[in-house]
Length: 262
Image 1 (cartoon, helix red, strand yellow):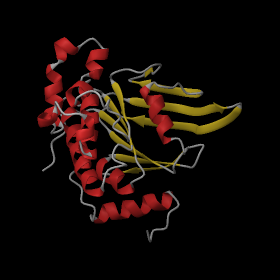
Image 2: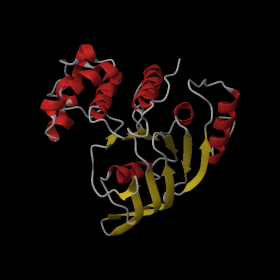
Image 3: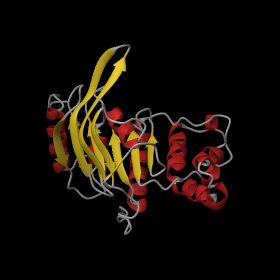
């Protein structure tokens, strides 16, 4: 049975506004445009997925939302205010767990609190998030002792210990086997529903987008612009063979230029 959305979802989340964003990189004197006039409004507590060809600029959008870069043209706003730098309210989770191998799971999860000088007053959050991601029995083990799914749970715990209001997910399950990926998708969905944060997911998996997101945004090839937006009105939990999801999958594949026979 699906969890009910958190009653305080708005308090635990932010609105993200991407306004007319065009972005370029300078590659050894060569101008590379990766985004072309992208505008997108994400409501507090909403779960949005980004789909598009490899290298089109999806990850760049996440970096702009995280405050790791500033757009060449346009604005990225958090609750109406410009995002100019990283902030613990906005956490980026990568495809690779990127855990420090010399630190235990507990010590990896504690990094954010340590960096913010909050470890003494908020150390209790470490145990809470480890329990939340079902790693409470693995606090003292090292990353090399974890499976791929467990390592990604630890990475999620490291993000959640900061109580983010926006979770940015860059293909977080892309390197996991299919069964572990399915489990992690369900666990992410439960975390989102219970914590109430806003979520922006980059994925190449059409089914993953449909199973998790409220809306799916389809981007063109580089330089990326928005070519389609599909709203997924089905309640959770969603079934892969649901007729409505099958129809939406066909629609999204067509938007991506892939034959409906795939």
